[in-house]
Length: 386
Ligand SMILES: Cc1cc2nc3c(=O)[nH]c(=O)nc-3n(C[C@H](O)[C@H](O)[C@H](O)COP(=O)(O)OP(=O)(O)OC[C@H]3O[C@@H](n4cnc5c(N)ncnc54)[C@H](O)[C@@H]3O)c2cc1C
Image (cartoon, rainbow, N blue to C red; front, side, top):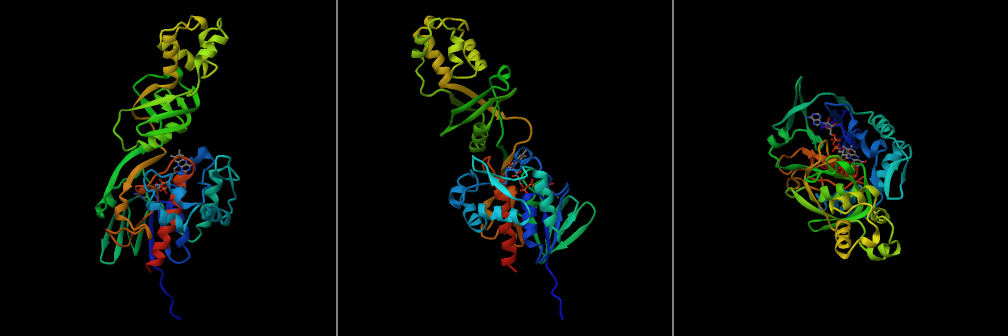
């Protein structure tokens, strides 16, 4: 009997995308998973340690709307592997999931450590190589993978190095990199909000450029953060900074009846009915209004000044907040990738998946969904091209 030799595949990066690809390939190929760090270590902080695996949207075109970069590219990817497939995949490796009220999907264990354990156990046919890949070169029909210690030969390569690694060898293979920018991050502001640090404004509107979003915002020692600001940072990731944000805390209030109803109440207490007390105090101080002024002494001009601060409060964002962003906007240009196979059209035999691509989504499980789906699609691309 002649035994067919299995092709050798190198996957560079054992994050969520690389591991999904490895899982799908391990029965048909010799799979080698390179990572300079521990495999699936990047899964641990996700969802605050609870691992927000996906978002419960089964219409793939609707799902793709949550990606400011990559929406159209993802149509074909999600048509192959979408939310239901993610849930089924995790169920198969022993991770039961549930859908939270806000549609985000988590493991029942609420533990990314548990997900990681189960996932690594399921990669039982994969060889892990704990080395940093320094370069990749094509030599005839083979690829040479260079690490500090050795040179390896492979038939095909999957690059899944995420959004925080070096793009050098990707560029050397002929690919264009769309300039990486921080996305899903807090913002540093020109105003100093340190006295408000930790104060949260719930369910406010924030206008920025052509966008008007609703959600929660929190003041920080260097500016602003919170879900609505994360989303703004994503939508505006490619815009030049500084840019202006305008918050609307109480869009439909008429302040006068409130002032009339309690003529002897201190104005700070009246404003505190609508916004947190510390923000009310901040506003009044900015307007040079004594906090204890009785309501009946607030004239039309002062009232309008307060209303303007409540509903047209301008904030200038000067840069992304310090520290690491949740996700990188930018990466390998999608123009050079076949969305049906995830293969490079510049260098055949090289495939890409995950955040290394110029794809990024909002908070809510979309970035991991990108990894599961593109990881699966890259594996299918390799199988299809056999
Ligand atoms: C704090 C935090 C919380 C998050 N929470 C969520 C969440 O709840 N839900 C969600 O959907 N998304 C979340 N994300 C985003 C999500 O974690 C990423 O989008 C995802 O990890 C990207 O996966 P990846 O496999 O493409 O890349 P990565 O996870 O970055 O993995 C790439 C791997 O490649 C390795 N590598 C890089 N270069 C080399 C090299 N030259 N040689 C060898 N190895 C290399 C790295 O060590 C790494 O292990 C979160 C991100 C952060 C930072």
